[in-house]
Length: 130
Picture 1 (cartoon, rainbow, N blue to C red):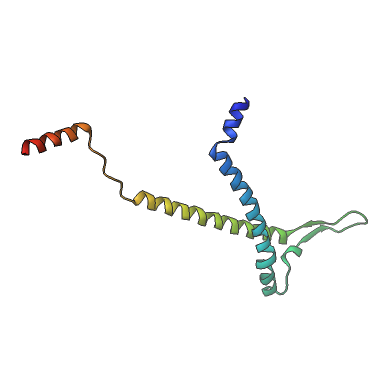
Picture 2: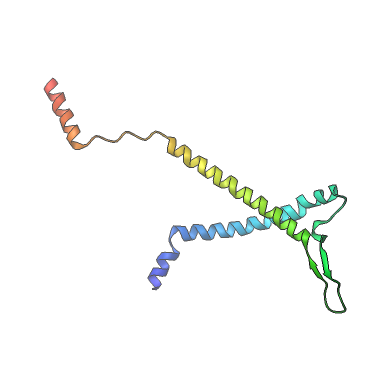
């Protein structure tokens, strides 16, 4: 069982997937910062100084030690924008990879080598011509 697990874990696909997950997590942090710190402030400014992370609907006011119950709509808007950016980025990467694959497929393949029988017949034909 240990040998099977080692063979599974060391396959190229598993390692590629692990690298993709790590890079994806780092990319997610970059996109979160891009949306929160770069994109949303100017949009909020254009809309009259609104901070999207502060947009919420209070369902129940805070009472004593009990915190308020809110629907954080602004945080949801930020998350949707982050998702759109990540989805578009992944789309562009996949599109680029597909176009590269298509270019490789369009390259003319070498004509197949003739079979041994055909080569032998060509040699006999050439010998008869001489």
